[in-house]
Length: 273
Image (cartoon, rainbow, N blue to C red):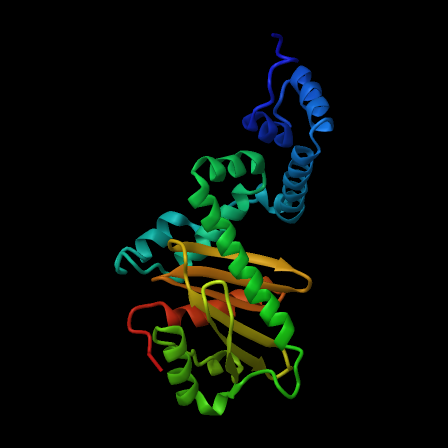
């Protein structure tokens, strides 16, 4: 059997997406995909994802890593924190490094996720689904004028007790007045994990940011960023709880808001309201 006639493997499909196949195998794989429309659709989705990532991050891939993302320094700064708590800086650095790495080799990384087994792949897709839930809730309620929340911000104590009881763990509702955001209020929402708490904040110019949190079904997950349709979110999972902070698609502004929220929710000594 010649190389042209040998079966097409999953590794070859990822190499095909990444442009790393020899010329004779590229032709063979293309012919095989023409005869297997389901696999062709999967490869097309991988290729579209790779193109989107390269378009968004390709320009920064060759830039020097900013000093604020120097991993050695960040690790030294967070060395004194408890093992089960990560500093916002360390998480942001991990997110930035992941963005740089995603500029190429998307097919291979997708293979790595599937090779780790169905459970690992399900955890990844489940966490992405959580981010989508958060963004959909954000888009649905930030446009509301009369009924954006169930419980107004003035009833913080009642809202904290109610949502803590419904979700089964202590809620911490950050005070963001120091960065110009007022608590509008909150509500209870359904989620894949059973229930989610949803909090809304508003700035002086009317911009709104939301926090969406629920029990995490998978392991702890480093900080991630997702954007689309004029909105974006930073999201992570820690201590069996997943959080998503959503707002306008302005990464610098959203990162500032997310950091302020993370500092109050996640770090040791955070005030329980």
